[in-house]
Image (tube, rainbow, N blue to C red; front, side, top):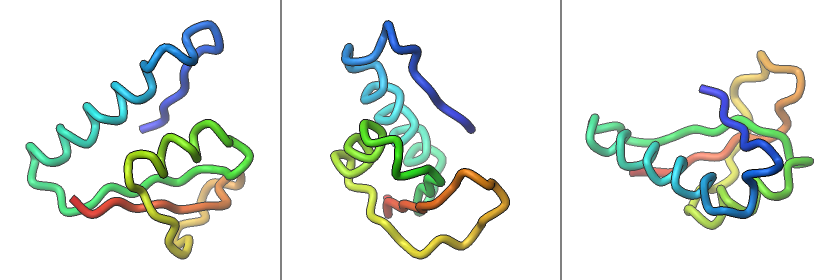
Length: 75
C-alpha cells in the first residue's frame, strides 16, 4: 500500500489517523509486525513513523529505487 497526504490536508492529523487505523487493522487480523519501506528525505513521515514506535532495521527488499530505509513495528 502506498500512502500520501495532499499538501492542503497536511498538519490536520489525518496521517496519524490513517496510520493508527492501519495498526489497529493489522492487530485485528493477528499480524505480528508491520513493515514500512520509505525514504529518509520524507522528514515528516520519518517523524510520524518514529512517533508510532517504528524502528529502523536493515533494508531487505530493494525492489523500489527510491527506498533507502526500512522500518518495522512489532505488534
